[in-house]
Image (cartoon, rainbow over all chains, first blue to last red; front, side, top):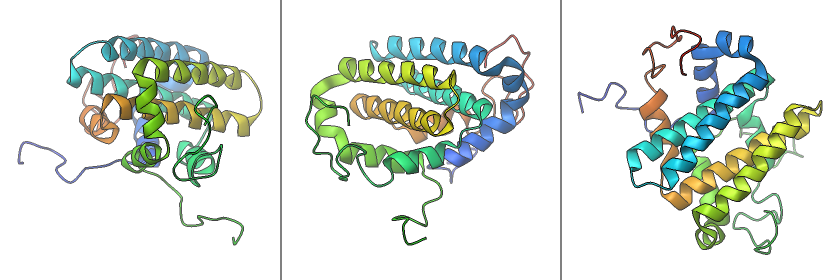
Length: 110
Length: 110
């Protein structure tokens, strides 16, 4: 495991990732603004769609990471705390039926 | 604080959220498949774009939560571990320049 530079890192929280992305990119992100950042995000969404149609699992994982990174970037520019947003909406279970295992009808939004 | 059913929850990890979304929705998600789930995701992306142009901060936070929830859902159906994907790509700093504070040229990705 000596080749792994962060051997103890097995999970990452939304607050940690949002802080990390802020440190890495905030000056550029703020200068670009929400609209310009959203364009980068959409480009990555397109690459994710392409990867989902392919068979390269490593590339697929990278595209998920990129989409999330750009989404976090937009959240930084728009000053939204993602961990709080997620806990508020999904922390108690499905926002539709309130259960930990959703019982909403299939045709409805959860 | 007695009105808050999870008063100690101040952050959430990607592994926790992915497991929670799996418990809530996996049976429906697997039946819908990647393509159908991607359509729901894109609908939420549109709602996020709309919220970013508005002034309702609470709604904006909800739309971020929904986009993330649908992205996590796609990851569940496609069998991708998001925490591992993020740590692999962003755990050591910017994937472009390798620094914790990015020094890549502005016109370059990321």
